[in-house]
Image 1 (cartoon, one colour):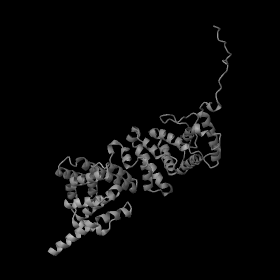
Image 2: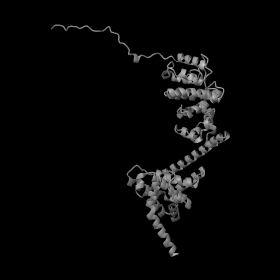
Image 3: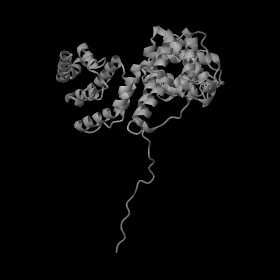
Image 4: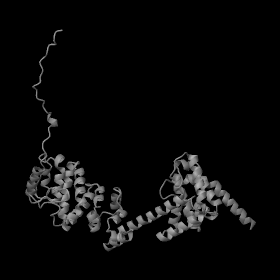
Length: 419
């Protein structure tokens, strides 16, 4: 058999790399040096913005370096050490001599971020690294940084979630974490007269509240009362109110969860004792106790089934909890409070609202001597509407209650005639 003829090949060809795949070596030092030159030339002024936003500065690759230089004056090493060779620039946050100079640097960073929105991610990354090792910096640097963080939050340059990194053990035990957070809050409120409510909503979006701040306190004085005293000394009365509201909400939630866990598993007497002792320890009001009791009863029910099954389960749970509700609703005012809580719960579920579940619950509580005729009629005649929710849902509930209310009124008239 004849051998197969060999064909020539291009084995000597050298593959070429596409231009788009060519990667230049990272050179943060050169970027920093160019940034130093422009900062020395233009300082922290509006004149620097056109120069710094030019194509000569590759922020896609060196955005973190830019942020580190503007904050600390030079590249920040892992652990928080700032490079001292070359000497850090004086045109940075840490070297600012006043809050106004700090905010001038923040404005430069803000103007660049508006032109290059991706810088926001770089700012988050750098602040996360710096806040994680906050204790290594000097007091002046920390004070300036707190003013800057407040300004960046107010300008939406920073994700509030970076503040969660104030949880290093050294910063907490030395009190630096709480002092830094307090400095941010104080500066934020002073800038453009911002409100406490707006600040707390901003922090809440990142899962930060006064409870988080309690955990930032040194272990020897880590309580809600200690945090309130800390805020009082600084004249932050609004934050004291915020903290007290959070504590109150947590206490209601604790009582609610305890009732849900015990309902049907302990005797009525044990359940009443638990509620009374918890109320005394937490100083809950009568209305707050009614709120927690009803919430605990409905929390014990699996309401993820079909509507009729949910209705049956809710009525069974209400019947189980009737002795407790009778115990906490001794006055007519608290009985009306309970009716309003039931109304709010039913109105939040459109499926339950369509069927007369509210009327069934109220009728059951009336039969169990939890609600009196006077309380039901007072609620109905007052025309109570929900603080949250549409007037339509309130009207639906009132229409469903008309036959029962008429029956109560008739029974009351007959009783009066007999007398």
